[in-house]
Amino acid sequence: MLSLFDRMQAIEDCMTLKNNYDEELVALETIESEIPVYRRLGTPVWKAEEARKRIKNIREWIAQELSEIV
Image 1 (spheres, helix red, strand yellow):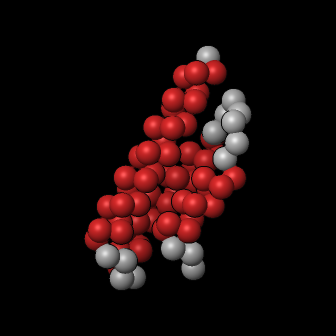
Image 2 (cartoon, helix red, strand yellow):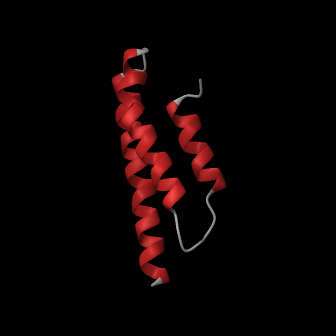
């Protein structure tokens, strides 16, 4: 099982400039919904919070990119 950060890094690594980031947003939503599972499996609280911040930053970047396209 990949860590939270490995999964987010995989999304970031595959992101390219495009008109639609739906797949990335769905993947981020899935990761975010699975954070409690990682917590139950022993992921420290600080890592879970860091993951939430990183997801937020990725979403903000996507929103900024989409606003510049329009």
